Image 1 (cartoon, one colour):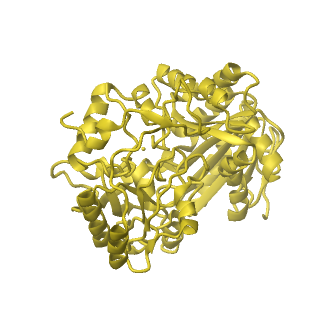
Image 2 (tube, rainbow, N blue to C red):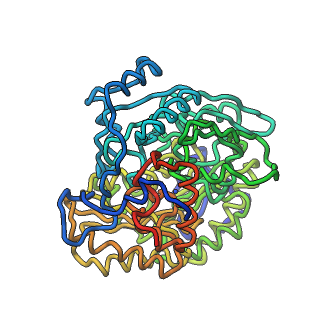
Image 3 (cartoon, rainbow, N blue to C red):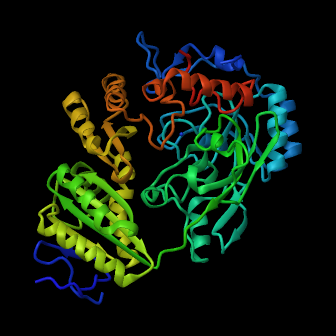
Length: 528
């Protein structure tokens, strides 16, 4: 018989129906000239060929921006001595996206260290009509972070200073080039944490996170960056500095301009600094890895979890058996529990260890005895918790070893999340190597990934626009957290009405009349 006083063990511990826990030691008016002319698709994104039926995610024709001259390079070298890069070998990395699916041909990489340097760069580029691609950690998955043609790459990598931290309010102010993981480590030493956590935290920049409105693993508990970013500083296309770097939680004076830049993917301005509200570091953290026989059981477990864990629930993630197969095959990660069709990662975080453990104990007891969960394991030690989290966080890595990956990031009503995976498998039949589903159940975010031995235009034509039509039919969003970038820009109408897209174009025209900022991204080639 289970006792309410049983304590969570401090290391991995298998669960069963008869043994839940045991004690142990252990992103009209006049439009920009560039946008008006962005109508003809001419270059294949996926296979480099010109086809009769061109795909919506092809790169459009190069717009009539100026080309970089030696005079331009000389100016940048005077402005940024030692930080103006023209070496082709050094430029290679910033011309190719993380998935190696989009490659630009930029000949200049600029590494400013201050907002004023960014302002000088954009003022000059706007005057010269030189296109600029802002780049943070280059971890994006929709081709938004790399040049499409020869845009100048403006890297925020050297803008990596923490400006201030208020331990009373928990407000961190820093430059846009700070790496997310470095910020997390800084805050942990001060008994705080960042409100977002991503698998790419070791490379991504906070400015890029804000520019794409990154979601991540903690959104269920702490919400989106639209709520956690209290202020930001941005440089507009003409070099004007917009200082909205507030640190106040309440400020109801006029329009909240910072929200325009959160999720704008670098198309409205270059974010140079942000202030973020950071929660206190929880004293008690538990991670549970569970198995379910059906997705219906998984959803019932989520409902039960929300009801019984309440305020301490910080994450509820899932992955399917195909994800587990890839983890085992390509990364040699062993399944910590018995084989199941679906797996759940639950994290709790709170301030009272005994209180949190009791709530978790009661939840697990109910989940097991009601047969919603068939197997599981619990971890409280940090190293063991990281091991369980790796089963979810390293799925993307495992997919890179399975072949060319078509990645999709959609929002759906929670009860329909996995129906899309099943529908895609039935739709594709044997044309794909793998079709896997994982994501954030707590906010209805599915990551649907499809692999093939190599880039396959026929397979792509079968996937798109099927996936967008299916998602739109369920009143979902075609991009939950990755943004639109280059790859998804022409699919925006599946999620946004024409009036909204036209308003976006007017805002772009007002803030960037020449269209020099991150061209070919986010907005569609044609307005309806």
